[in-house]
Length: 463
Image (tube, rainbow, N blue to C red; front, side, top):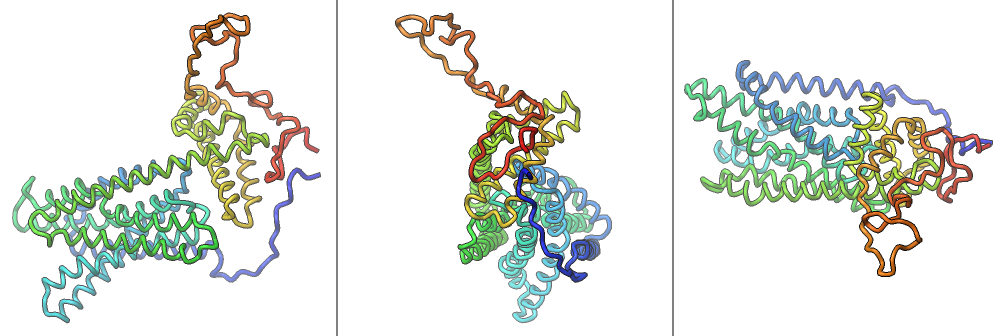
């Protein structure tokens, strides 16, 4: 008799050549590559070869820090690198190309129609550029939301996808601005701190490397909240991303128009709006990440009852410190492969917790059982390395037992007590109570299988 329902099968359908995955991937890669070549030629034409190289060397400095920050935010349930690579490439190539072409065309058209080049530049910077640039960056978030829906499950995913896209866009834009500033310095002979290049570097790279990510993150939050909505709220799912996009455009327009507010307009907008907004969004993302860890601790005990996990694993997997200690323990005792196995175990356990939460809310999809089974089987195959590491991490991070005062009538239970009024031979309240011998392939006998869980781990006790 089978231990679980068979995988559902689909009837064979004829697929056209344009529906095949390799065709779609090839078309996307070709589009991004062509966009990259065109944007490279345009930027080099405006800055010159030497200015391009200087701008490239300076613009790349904040990129690793921003990518590492967004990756850190995504540590609870990290998305695949291919999504981040696509987002960065889209922002640096496709979105930047759309912005340069559309902004230039719109500004020239306004200047010709109004015969006021200065007014056209101001209008282009405060109205045209925010609309065009935020729409171009939002396209990457929309594509991931539509075609990588399994990897886009909440606010943190929206923040990471939008932030990495904006980081790529800011990278290309900084090359253009820094290269142009260097060309200006070459003509005027300025150098050092008093140069235009130094001033541009200070404003764009030192003071506001988070500006573009901050704008686009508002769009990502809108998509993230839409991802959390149930299928019945179609209108809300459509309006939330649009509201986030409009907020991103508004903040971008305020930032670009700060120069028109007087000599200290930039610093006023920076202090009054940018810094508080950055702090508020940072708090929101960290708070959301803590909620995700709470979801892991709340959903995984069901799989403990079913025998897939040990009792200490929900606690260890719901703590970033315990996860890190488990990977370090595995690296010391099993090398890099062991650390990678523990990291995969943590990722699979987190995914199955989020999948179960979406299933309870009616948002898991028709393939819920198949995906849950695949994740649980992956956990089962990695348990040999992961369980000792997680058990060690749980013991290392468990809070110490609270001291109990001695009762006035003496020692209870008639036995000796330690310094805190505990029996010396009493088990620790935080010690894991494993339902089977630790770290063996033997599954628990007659485990309790909840009604929502149709199968238990494989074992010789199962027919």
